[in-house]
Length: 405
View 1: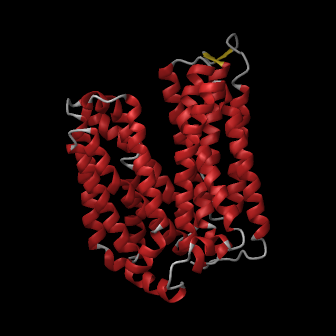
View 2: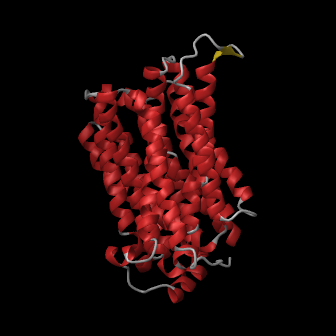
View 3: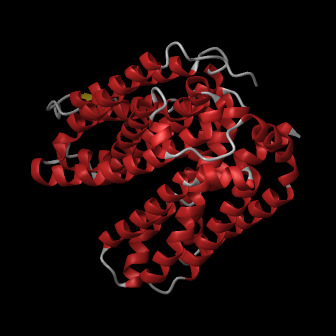
């Protein structure tokens, strides 16, 4: 039954990733149909992110009251309704309305499942959990593309996704009994009342943990969203090629999390994080190297700068891969199981704030200084994250213990 529950949790994270990249893929069609500027997609993303942050901040109190199983089932139901709402939206305003339950549902299920796996499962399971998200995020655009190639509307793509979410909702409600034993155990071990934000920040190392998480997510999102523009405008790489190269970054993250899950049997979370940081730094170095003029130098029929940026993005993705899940999984060891739920909810909020704020901030800087600033900007974020994580390790050095699973 325990293995069956983990399988259901994996399915939930695949479903969490499914719609994430679809809006970006479908927006060129949607904005023309709605008659709005292409830039208006930012308003939908912003509303989704704000609702996700809100539900992440409230995740601990909701979980203590209703339990992880019910929160997960209801959250997936919310996202199913929201995605169906997207499919029938006649205008941007209606789509914005359905973005609210989408964000609330996504934030709740993200925080609840991350907490549950961090407390009850191994580092391997945590890394593979986030690998499942990557699989879902990759499958979503493929489902949309398949529907469009058959001559259907983008609405049909969202309808298919809502049906998948609805099916999973039924599975989750039918499997509520699987969560019972562990949730009863949690209630006897954890604090009965939610911790305030001030109480969380008073925990030794909590501030460093949240800032590390905030900066990591800023790096990942900035690399994913701006590497294409950097290649097109600074490296003068053709847009079609640049788009395919960006996919390597996400492939690196997904494959890297699968690989990290294997290594987690022998490596502790701290080793995975520091190893990932080393690989990420190498990727950033190659990103700088790609800016050196090299049009005349060719290898395997490709320009040297193209090879360098391919390696840079692939290594950056591999380096990023273990950091997010390992920081979450190390939370019980660093701060105690009784504080884990509160901290993971705030970690999710920090993640979404970092992801939401830094890419637009870089956009402002790029407008002034050009996209050539991209490697420098990413490297500054990297060293900021590394510095804060070093401080986290120092402050929790005498507190780390082994969590039995």
